[in-house]
Picture 1 (cartoon, rainbow, N blue to C red):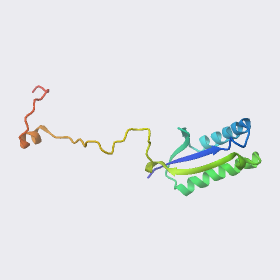
Picture 2 (cartoon, rainbow, N blue to C red):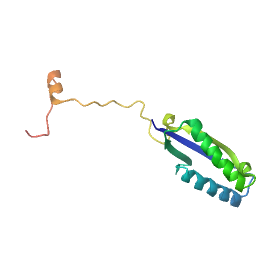
Picture 3 (cartoon, rainbow, N blue to C red):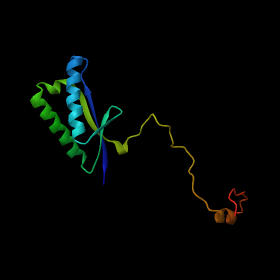
Picture 4 (cartoon, rainbow, N blue to C red):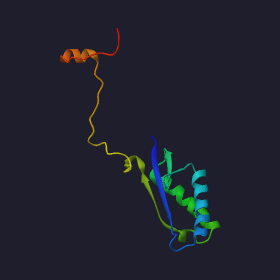
Length: 123
């Protein structure tokens, strides 16, 4: 069973220089991509059979490795969290909760219900 997780990482641009944040972001981006994530709509997305805890540990290990090479790495992160994207709704898409359900009905079923129709298919 595959899971779809999104990892959100926001840097502290309000208290850190833009140039340093950019360098830190590039390290994060390189590490996340090499760990199998793709970057979509401001979120790192991964399709995996790992659990949320396993993915969280992988990201924390990446952060710790960056911390070893870039002192004060964690001071650049304002927040970071993981979500199961299978349970999330994209609010930019139209609301389809009140749509009409469409089902396939055969000509035989229409005939048995007594519904008149004109077929565009020539027999």
